[in-house]
Image (cartoon, rainbow, N blue to C red):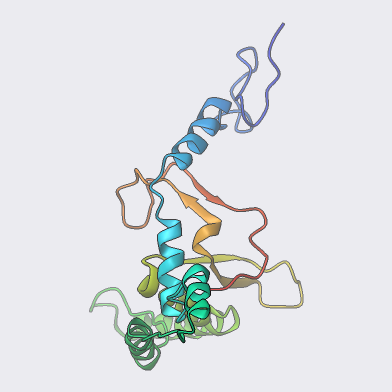
Length: 202
């Protein structure tokens, strides 16, 4: 009896190679990815703690309770918060529109005209997709916790701009930590939590 083909166990040996049944993720590969995720370093709790320090929540509930029992007011000196805010302010101050420049010096006026037309479309997409806001939100978590993500996707609302940019919470995405390229182009997997549309704090 031939094993049926699914998206996880790959094509059946008796089936011819087609675009629909080749390159599918096998069940073994799928489970290996999740085993790797379980063995990844426990950096997320540390990142959450670093964001708590940025928000001024440096004392745990246990310490606050003990201080309350002995009548000691909570003493918090937010040193890291103002420093990160200064970096974020510099990013906002130096932010510029995306630009397209002609590739090469010998293209003449035609290259400038094409670049001008592309710049108009690019600036329109940058503004309507809210790319600047998404990049700024991701930059904030990069500075405070070390990593930030931005998702560029099609907008499901047909009455809005076709594309949208959103910042994704660091705890809602998992990636191949064995990848060596800066843009993760050699990563074997990039997993986003299915319920990530819930609102979260930074």
